[in-house]
Length: 575
Image (cartoon, rainbow, N blue to C red; front, side, top):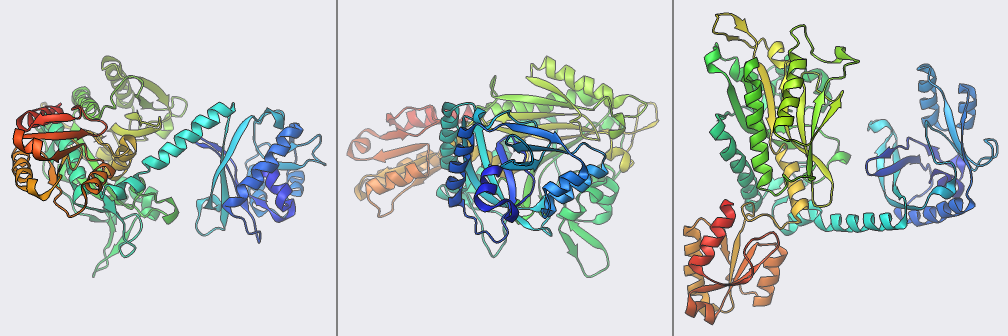
């Protein structure tokens, strides 16, 4: 791709940023200077790439000196900067080139590799899109043009990929969220700050109520904390050093520096620390759907998937060492129940990352002489085995404060999302000097367990909208049934059916608008209402409903008595 761009626009006119492979394909950043580059130019680049492939040029590697590398990339400020860094670190400087020798190569580039041996080995590829990207992700640096692409073993794999991409476009939560009337954004309020409609808010409540119903039985208690805090809280927790550039600062009348909270856990430690604690008080379990705020760059915002106001399905338990196992098992049971209700807790549809420390670099973690960190890793692995979790032990992925279980779920398109998580924390109790008095009268430090079932509620909703393509399970649908009479003369019967449904706690809407019957039905289908009840003379005479069922429903289309349909629908919801 880079060779094609250089041949088309001139090596001396184009500067090159970075160009790695990613989980989604590959990309290369270009500084086109004064060249007016557009997305429509991708076809021209693809054509030149095919020419290069057909020529079956060799691709070779050559290790060069710093001086040779700088000469090869003379005038390219980005490569010059990278060469200086590589040289300073004492690393080998290598270039890959297309052609028989470096001097006459049609393209050469600073690169670590590896690459294929010949251009003819490329079989199927597609350039997918362009985007803007700051050099090194810093908005103070120049904006480069990033060209994305994908490559596959053969055309059949490429075709499958393109079909998946088309399906993903149909499922895009930004598109469906608008069609379903779930959320909106306003320029007057700002990017990354979603506004949830009554339907969207109801869906959020259904998710959080479901989780709360599962966890309250296990002793979790709701807490509420403010949206701002003094910066000293995060200096103590250690978050200030890591996140200070991502925080919204708040200035009041005095000199105190406040910030919008980027996470809830430090606040929860202060509820624990508000009075002396005994071993009899443990475990203490605090749960909250708290909104946190992070000053994300505008270019990284993406619908609900990446926002500045994040509602966290947050929970923190404070427990003794001998209570860790039971607490973890209980949280795993909540995750299992919740994702089972979404049809996602299935063999082959999820896996669990057992994230543990890197034994070669213990200095990166809070591993102390008591050996509790390592014992906690062993406990998590034993639980994963006994609960038959499809886990993989991933060394080096533990947080510095402790090991964790991260639940990775696949959506309908096969994409993986890290959603539920259980994390052990030995750091924050120490930083905040949290204590409890044990039965022997000695002061001990509790272990803190962070847990999230859905994670970010906004991101979770984006995943659910795309996973179900808007056809939500009936329990999660903001509207479960829409009643549509074929003429005004059946409105009275429709109203009586509406009241019976409402009395049965079914979320139902009666469409008595002046639109035509066809338009009403099309609208209901566009909004992906699980069940549509069309009412006419026959239904009125027989006290029945003519039901048209959508996707992801248990009840088939057909005619049902009102009481019969209510019973079936209630069974589906409770199941």
